[in-house]
Image (cartoon, rainbow, N blue to C red; front, side, top):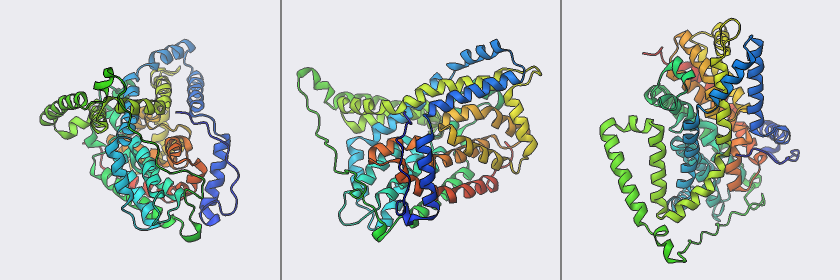
Length: 478
């Protein structure tokens, strides 16, 4: 995914809601980030250089460093493909005919301007629990559908920011959490991480009661802020005011033009494939149970893919959606191998004292934290790093060795260490334009149009999340 942004003009009085305060500050911050922040891949390359230099500083041999880089590079290929499919399947489901009709129904629910913004926040955060890509596309289409209504006047910027809350508030605490899914799948787990923690099931991460309570509290607060921060009256800027065309796209159904295309436009083959998939689902659910089945990332993607095929109803429509979704996975495909190599350099290259960089970092955390404040220390660190490395899965691969090692050294709950990462990981998304790109493409807006509202969310979310990470921390691993 490209993250090259157009330069935004400096904000002026009236650009931000209310024209002053936190939102105006956020607009200035976003204008600077859009102008000066390079593509996300630059941060990957810089991280690699920093880790290599750190290895050299510890006395590691150059050829050992180069060997670890090459051998570690391809160790995450299964997980890379799995994460790419998370994005593809979410997009395919969101753009299907039934989902489009569902969006039209959802758009008719709210009866007020602020209520519409809060409703978008609720829907997108609910969708993000299932799939983060689904929440982005569905949220953008929902905002466009609401903007087409003539009976209520809704601020297009505030609604667009609400559509981003799935990524900025809750996605990492849901079923598409890269970190939780990676730790629960032994086939995808790099040896550098499994040697420290072993496999950690979802029952010890996203399905901890503490994690669910934290999710509900964060979502409730985000919806409340979305409601009260939405402009009213003369402050409202509609899609028309923003120069955005929200008319329904040309959805003229593709037609069969030659006999050989008959099976491409027929429901027979999709029905047979989905029927076979249903049989597999029955066997898996009856044998292993629902939780164990969906904990397997291959199963998770498999079910979403089959649902997408069923909802599209024919092969041509399904493949068209897949083709449109593939470009959104470019960042994942090219960056994850570098993250794997960085993880290898952190965990597999000993310095002159025989200790790896990962152990040096974990010892640093142990020296400044204890079991009580460990969640807050890791949460603050991870949220700051997340602005520079905007990839939940890739960043976890880098952080996991020393975060989990620190948890082990402090006898802290391993699963909660992952949820600390997950909750903190979502926070920088609120002011990082990287993951906004798919949504911005749907809405026809720029990052600066949304971040004023998202920054307001961050001001409240950061202290709340840190408090919850501390107060809800479970006891040490059973």
